[in-house]
Image (tube, rainbow, N blue to C red; front, top):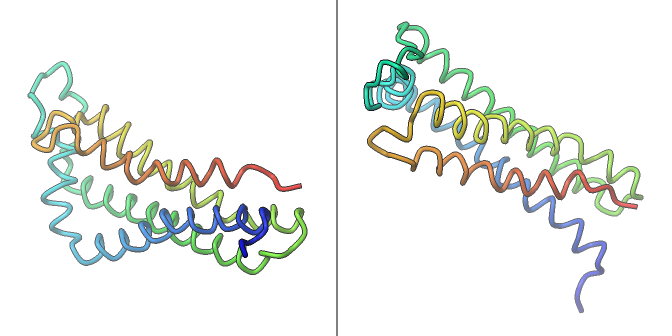
Length: 169
């Protein structure tokens, strides 16, 4: 009636990889279609720290070079896209080796692990830590929501990563 424990356990990383996989691909499409608006409305104010409290002891680290915001969005887009594509590749690899012995199944996890690592780097470290605390996004109009948004994206990738690094026997 129900699938075996092994089958159920092997479904978990496949489903969890949908989070960074789909978010990464959709982020690519969103960033591509709204590139100039995102540079103007989100990245430039963040880097230039124009939405902060304006404390010179903190705003010395603002980046105001005209090329910085577009370059930052290109880097963010590349990282999000890599997270998405590696995660989707991981799903395909796991589906192909769904009934394989443990050593083949474990080897098939590598693209998904790398996708999750990239997702944690961009959404966890990039959005939560660098944007949140270095560029003080929590002081902006959105407040702590910018960091929470990064957490919402990073958390499923973190959970998937924990599932993926467990080796089957």
